[in-house]
Length: 417
Image (cartoon, rainbow, N blue to C red; front, side, top):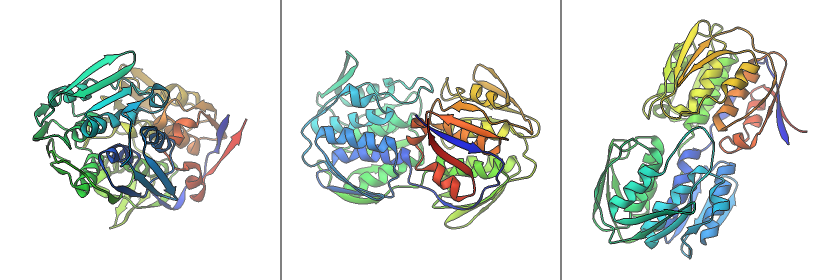
C-alpha cells in the first residue's frame, strides 16, 4: 500500500498551475455519447475518475486516445447501452451516461454507481426527471433501465438543485423533440461548461448558471474541440494550503468568479488575497482567525471545501461553527483530525471547532477524496511526521497533488509499505 509521508512546518511559497475541473470533465465525457463526430478535450487532468469514465465509454464502444492533457473521444460507433456493475461501482459519476444513452439510443441499462461514502446521493431526482420526459424507468437487481416511450420536452421542477440530476436531464433532453424546461436547476460553473460544450456541438441550451434551463431538442450533434474550465476545488485547496502554512502562493489558471465563497471565507480568517486577470495570489496570516461556515448549493460555500476548512479552523484563534447541509456523512475526517490533536465536537450536522496552535503528526487515513485533502493540509501544519494511507481516494480528484506541493516547498513524498 502506498502512503504519503508529510513533515510539517514548511511555509509554502511559489507558483502552481490549477488543473482542469474533475467535476466538469466527467459530465462532458458522458455527453460525448451524444456526438457522431470526434471530440477533442483540452486541459484534462490525470485522475483515476477520468480513467474509470474512459473505461465506461470504451465498454460502450467508444474509442479514446490520450496525449498528455488532451483526450480524443469518438463515440460514432457506440453499439451498447449497458454499463455493467463491476465498472459502475468504481465511480459515482458513472450514472451520468444514462441520460446521454437514453437521448441517443432511446434505451439505457446502468448499474447503480459507487464512489465516496460521504452520504446519500440518491438517483430519485434523475429518474423522476427521465420519467417526466417520457422515458419508462424500471429498477431491478441493482440496475436502472430505461426505454423511450414517446419522450418529448416537458417542464420539470427539481425538488433540490442537484448537480447530477440537472446534468443528466439536460443530456436526456438534448436529442428529443420539443423544449424541456428545468426549474430549480443547479447553478454550478460545471453546468455552464457542459452547456457550452453541447452548444458548440449543435445543441440548443440556454440558462445554465441560472435556476431555469431550457433545452430545445435537436436531431444530431457533431464533433467539437473544447477546453475544460479550471478546477475550483483544487484552487480552493491550494489557497487553504497557503493559509494554513502562513505561505505565499500564486495560483495560475483560475476563474475568480467560481471561487468567491472560498475567497470570502479565507479573507475572514485573515488571509490576504490579490486577484489579477489570470490568477490569484494568497498570503497566509500569521494569526489565523476563526469563522463560521454553512455549506450550501452554488453560489454558496461548497461542501467540497468543508473538510479543508475544518483543518484550517482547527488551528485558528477562537471557536468556529461548521454546518454541513449537503451530505450527512461528511464529517468522517473529524476522527482523523482528532488523532492529530484537533479539538472538534460533532452534534448532528454541526461541528464545533476550538482552534489550537499545535497539531501533532500521526498515522491517519483518507476516508474520501476531500477528507484526504484536509489531512494533507493538517499534515503540512503539524509537528513531526504524518503518514496518510488510502491514497486511492485522493487520486480520484487531485492530479499529482504531492508533486505540486513539493514544488512549493512542502516536505511530502510517497512511500510503499
